[in-house]
Amino acid sequence: MNTKIKRRDLLKTSAAAAAVVSFPSVLRAQDVVFKKPIVAALNAPDGNPTNLSVARIPEIMKEKFKLDLNLQIFPPNSLGNDINVLESVQNGFVDISSNATAQFASFNDSFSFADLPYAIPDWDTGLKLFKSDLWKEQTAKFEAAVPSLKVLPPVGAGGFRMLWNNDRVLKTPDDVEGLKFRSTRSPIGQALFKAWNGNPTPVPFFETQEAIKNGVVDGFHVQPIWTYVFKFQEVLKHATKVDAVFAIQFQVMNANTWKAMPKEFQDAFWASAEQAADEANALDRKLEADFTQKLIEAGMEIYTPNADEKAKWQAAGEGLWDELGANIDKSVIDKLLALRS
Image (cartoon, rainbow, N blue to C red; front, side, top):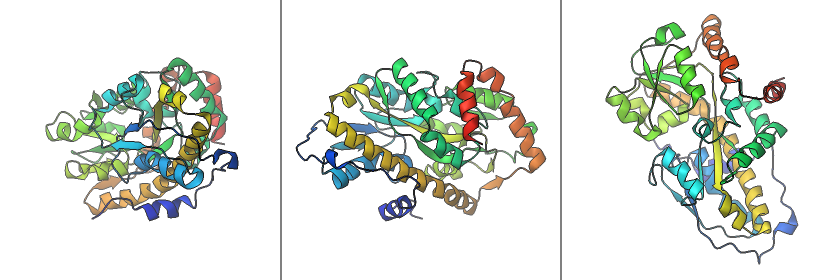
């Protein structure tokens, strides 16, 4: 089965996107030049929405502004693992990269609020958050704390994570006892596994399949699209729709690269990045259900908890808010909750 997302599908889906970027004619200056090659190291393969959210930027700049951006995208893991690449963006060896918000917790915790279990209950809330004043405020805080990075428009990363394992059906947290799960460095992610009676084990994403094969871990907490594209259906058997964490792909650029762009080029780049993110989000939302079905067809068993079972998963997750959200400004939580109403 060909899983590569065709460009016509992206463009067709993007036409239905809720927000369309308006391009001021003043930015169409054809004498604006920025010759520096932009190196992007992305943790998603060609065709994945979180890859397209960057890959589409030079196309849009050319179409809308007649400006040329020399963007060079390197395949996943070709310039190092997740941690290596994020460090490379800081020092300027790589210009653009992206990863789950949880991977940035060790840099700064401005966006930790978005990873609180059950903080984002659905796609509509997630998209509202991306366009909100709250996101802009937290972006400013992050960039002040990590001046080497420029935050780009965010994208979803496959919707909600499912709890996958290769041993048994997990109907409630009681069924998790004794299982080891691949985790990021995020304190929130690790605490959630523990609240669900699991054992978190930090493993770089691209080493996870071997870790499962070798028994280092029994599963992970990942979205359907990433599970399918990276062929984890070959080593995993079961999943539970816990709906605890809405995956957000946090995109960053080296700040010096951004500052080196002429103002007109910056404006065109930013408008193009926003449109690319909108397109990717619209497509990503559609594909969440599509890839869930593909996994079922591939032989995966995906369990949906009933109301009582779901309440146990959610209670364990929300029970961490006081502890994990202790350093999060209450106003941030209040603004997040307001987006849900």
